[in-house]
Image (cartoon, rainbow, N blue to C red; front, side):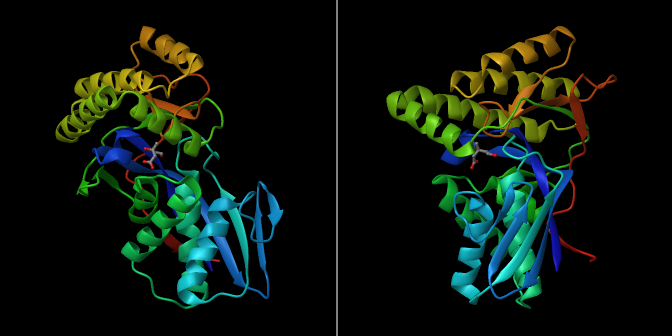
Length: 286
Ligand code: MEV
């Protein structure tokens, strides 16, 4: 069986969402496809390499298999991964591969799982690998669409976005960097999270208003910089875009990864264009 799940763009609220604040997230038109076949042993094939269950090389898929196996008893499977989503870039490659793996395993082994069950298992897998996670990535890869999270209010995002990839980094490292800052300066960090929370809520109420959304993108980026997840290189590219009237921010964990802004006219250099509100996890034709 083949299942596919979408990547995502966090419009507002990354990091703060790990501490219970609101975020806005949308599924995008880049997908990860996972093919599962019954087999005697476990084999995982991806652009990273070919392994058995390997918690270092293929942590997300291996933990997905482990968690699935704890509930449904599994002795072997051949798993092939193919993805349009750049790895470790903030566009939800990990969430998408976990969700598509669980869906393909359940379909191949004839087990009914609701979207909520897939999401709950995928969220656990993300925590297995990252230690701390809000669940926003597996949520959006499972359900698709665009949402105010965690309260699950569905939104219409009437824009296309340009996305610039600034290179690979580790979400777990960035999440623990913020956890350290929060320990060192709890009151300041909590206030920044509160401000980010307000940004997400105001954005959810003004999603059709391009100028407001652009302004909120800039404020959110400044706050991400304040909690240490921007980089001098990202700041430089964003300043360059701002000189041309384009507001941009990091999406996802930062420290590299992707930045995005509303697409207006010319597509900026080195960027791809993404659409929002795409469908969640689904079975694909063989
Ligand atoms: C990662 O896509 C988003 C973070 O907020 C982590 C999380 O929510 O689990 C950085």
